Structures are given as C-alpha cells and as structure tokens.
View 1 (cartoon, rainbow, N blue to C red):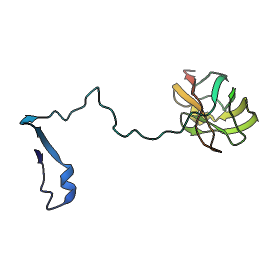
View 2 (cartoon, rainbow, N blue to C red):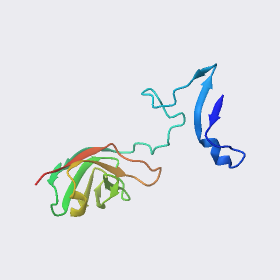
View 3 (tube, rainbow, N blue to C red):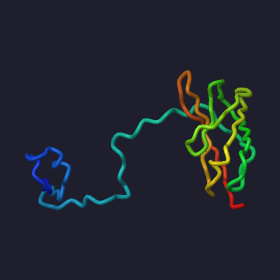
View 4 (cartoon, helix red, strand yellow):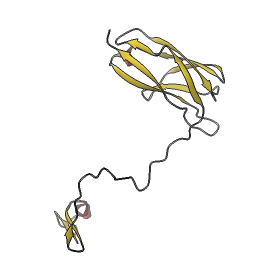
Length: 137
C-alpha cells in the first residue's frame, strides 16, 4: 500500500509525493540505509593508462601557475590532464610523459585535488588517479 500526499488524478507528478509505504501490514522506513546500493550504476569510462608520478605534488594556495610533469603509461597525443575535474592545458611528450599547467585560479582553495589523464580516442577512458595538494601559504 502506497499513500500519496496529493491526488495523482489531478497531476500525474503527484505520484512522486509518497507519504508512507506499507508491505505486509508493516510500515517501511524510507530513510537512508547504509547498505543501499544503486540498482543500475552510472556508467563510467574505462581505466586507460596509469599515472606513476607527478612533479611537483603540492603548491601553496593562491600561487602563480604551476607546471606539472606526469609520468606513467598509456598516454596518447590527444590525452589531456584534469585537475579536480577541470581540464588543463596539456603538452604530449611521449606515451610515458605529459606536461600540464595548473592556472593560479585553480589553486585558490586549500585541499587535495584528483589529477587524471583523459584519453578521448580511440576507445576513451581515464587513467588512474594521482593527488595534488594545495597548502596554506
């Protein structure tokens, strides 16, 4: 038994306004459960390439742009580096090395930021992650 807050005959979207649910005469707790899993997980890009090291690994907050050197495997000429999900200007050196520039405006917050390499072609995918630390000045 599902009890709705508003009449779905007036507006079909009211069928989303669920007040209570009963199964076998027992009310079901509809709150968050620690063992909840998404039944159909969101598709992700495959892991293509690995990051073995980055240099430097940190920079002070509000610093100037930082030139980053990534070493690893599986980089292509169209690969580019992301910093916390933001794409960076990237230069391909070899299948084992890339250079990228982190602009100063991305270094305005203290924290740990994921570094990934995106390989858009031929099959697409991302590399393993490395982490860059933005410290207090």
